[in-house]
Image (tube, rainbow, N blue to C red; front, top):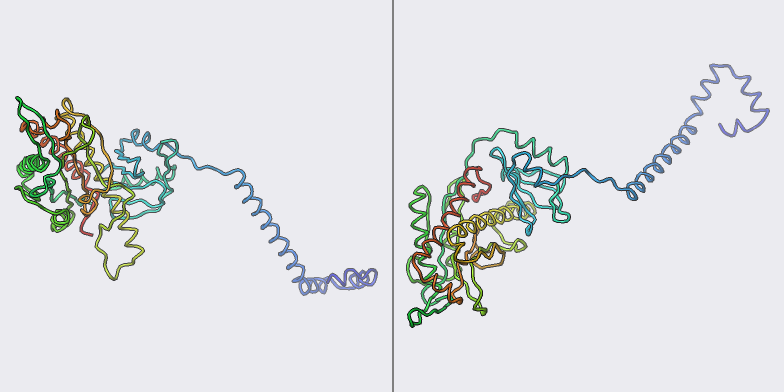
Length: 386
């Protein structure tokens, strides 16, 4: 066609001699090459326009609108539990929970369903969430619950050391007499008191005491006891290990509660041979973070309970994370409580006082009770039988 139109007068004369119907037929027949040219121009234009968009977004990125999640939760009456160390947390309202981890693009709804989200982030110590996430959360919290209830089915109390293993040893002087204090005796006394409180307060739950006498148990035997407990559907168990502290610094004193360091990885679910291995890894990781969140809550409640009972006599050293054997090998929310320093003479005297140990046991019991109430009121956020 282009050749024809560029042949000067001959082309012009030819065109004027063509009837209108013929001219219409001519252009219909010869136009595909022109259409291809136009289509190529359009594609080039769109590619150029898309490239400009990419360059513009790279040079001038558009930031999604985000809010301070903790502040927004307070406005809506949503309870939030946030661990800045593990960067994981839980939102709770209307019997529902949303478990999340900063930076992840998935969240767990009521520990049953995974959803894709815009990742939460932490900047300058502030936890922020996108407006889209807030709308997702609000929509979920407004849904009706299915009535499924979760409960704590068992509590395992583990007094540290025993038998040939005395644990830490300290001394103090009373009336000119040197008195020796052994960790294994202190932990057993507190463990038996706590066990008695739990048996009395929760007759509907299974309460276990790993040792009730001056008996030696290996660390593996202790966690085997905990992990061998058979729970009913929608039941969970918690594990509390009791210890006394020691230090080369004779002035060191106070009580503290430990949970498993968040970066430590363990297997908390039972893998099925037919199960997708990649899916198992994801679910195990999320369940492990669930256990970490719950362990932090237990530690906080116990710390509050101890502070209320003995805060005027001993110092609260806070909640801490480490890779204690009994904590990292228990496939359930677990904490380890250090109730005082036997190497501090004043504290060793307190730890040898039965009335003081009663207050320690009461503090731990009150903390566990607070967690159990919270867990069961909120329908729970752990299913250990999956």
